[in-house]
Image (cartoon, rainbow, N blue to C red):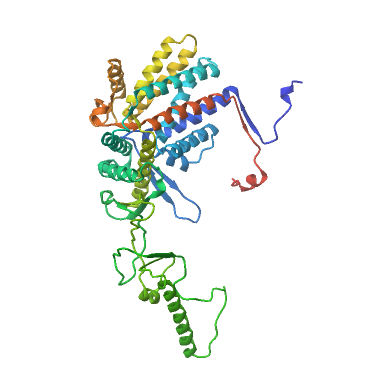
Length: 485
């Protein structure tokens, strides 16, 4: 009997081999790419994420942030999970480009599927991709511009990057206002990159344009009745102490009295204890008291509870607060995510001051350089290198498709512009034409763009190496938890 007829894996385990495993891998990756590619670019669409749990109210998110979408969906395909993790890493590393990196990895694997169908070995494809990725990053580095030494020009770069980042978000209608907020907040950090010093508060009501930035930390607290609304040179005490009455805290305990007079005596004793507590607090020579717990009527008569307090002149001088306003909680949440992405990209740019041009300009430059490499490379690797260039060109194609424009026409015009050595030519999404990205101000962070190419290439290479998918036997407790049909 053949050795293959003897089972090796535990009962209940599953195994997919060779072509079946690769097909499963490609299907999972392409499905994830197709799911989120419609959110790419300034004219990208949003997704509604609805999560419901038994006994709880359904929660709704409306977003076009790649990392948020992929984090919220449940996927069973192992390769799809790899791309979900890829977007999370991109989000953690540089804060933006989560959709781009996932779509590029997906397009690379779509190209790989065609090459595998042509009977090309995965290792040959990987060798070609490595050469292509190296060339793409070298070209990106060579065209990057650095204005870190010119303060005025660098601030313009930061404003352009903020506008470009926010142009694909919900804040695009007010991107000038929010770009100013983001750049001002990041410049206050003085290069530290410590985003903990930027506090975001979401207040329901008003319009997005009503959002503002204030120095120091704002605390979202209720101001006590008849208390001052403004205190200068505040001496602040922050506490977490009960300010109702010193009730007996033992569960189930009761106090028996034989007359209503005794109840009055108990209340008076509690009042005296609370007055002593307030006096002990006031003895610290403060004029502002912030308490985590609720302050009841009696102690409220005795001292000021702090409201929206501004911490000016604190040791962390770069601290500031951005207050976001919006009509619904979903708008506020998406505005928060959008502004956070912009802040992350700006802090990365302050550390790595080089910039590149967007609108498909950088992708086309890289794709053309990779195509030139393919023309000079002998052997089958040339086909794999050319497939990498095709995948890079797909990013501006998808951006154009999402805007409802004729992508075939626009991309061919963009290629022609670059062949005429117009190095800053890119897609002008406002006018459905080819424009000068330098003049329009479509600027992106070099660090973000570089990370997209490197991460997507590495993830696609890892998936392409797969020739076996083995699913372990479910544990007994997992089997019990499965719903019965």
